[in-house]
Image (cartoon, rainbow, N blue to C red; front, side):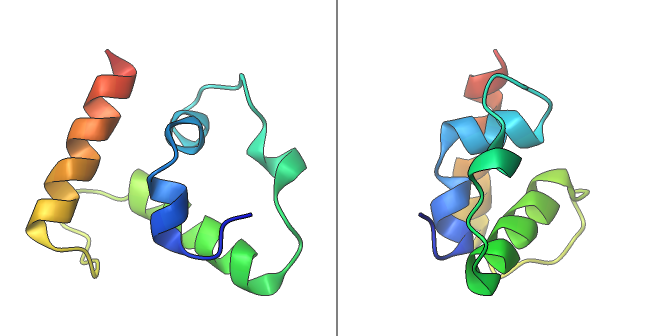
Length: 74
């Protein structure tokens, strides 16, 4: 179970699911606790957001997430 946004964004399967891979259905395994649901939704929004959306991530963290996503897609 993930408790914060960073936990979700470090999970390759979560990233793939949000970006369209239906191999693993996160909606079926998503916990019902409000904090976890909030973190899930926030992580989802970050992955689907445009480049100019302001987040609390540092520039280095953003770059690492982009690299991780790029590597997953190629």
